[in-house]
Length: 114
Length: 108
Image (cartoon, rainbow over all chains, first blue to last red; front, side, top):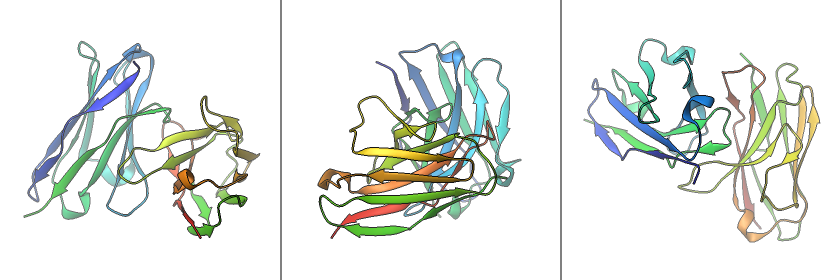
């Protein structure tokens, strides 16, 4: 069926990097973009950026520019989000979503703690 | 950047009550607005797209209206399974998305 399946929970130390994957199935991967959205504990939804699975074009939220990189691997229909120089306030559930959000992954908990 | 102001931030209502949530955009977004339901520990679920269209499989007690800058989301008869947080989201400024702050709906 049509779905997005994300990688498992991560625990990282401040200053480290994390790379979350999002594997698509059930649809033509290159026909849609992938948005990344995060949600800190008890907080609302924050858009992080978007990548075209067709040509790799990206658009990042200004507050994350320079720390985030989004990529895709069309051979495996997988999107990736890498966040560097992690801080405690990056602790959140990270979601991938198809384009504007009809289809969502299950979420990946990233905990940043020393 | 487009800002989305959602209100109230929380509400408590009885089963069977009519519940209304509003969302205001900082600029004209036409009808490029989604409404989501999020239950604890789960990903958001799309309920309404293009401001007023019901996503397939979503109960008809959910509805949306509005265009331009002012939007309304309504649950016509609140059910126990509707306990959740609801978010509006604009997609006029693609690919950037903006979410409202959320409305937590509880049973009185």
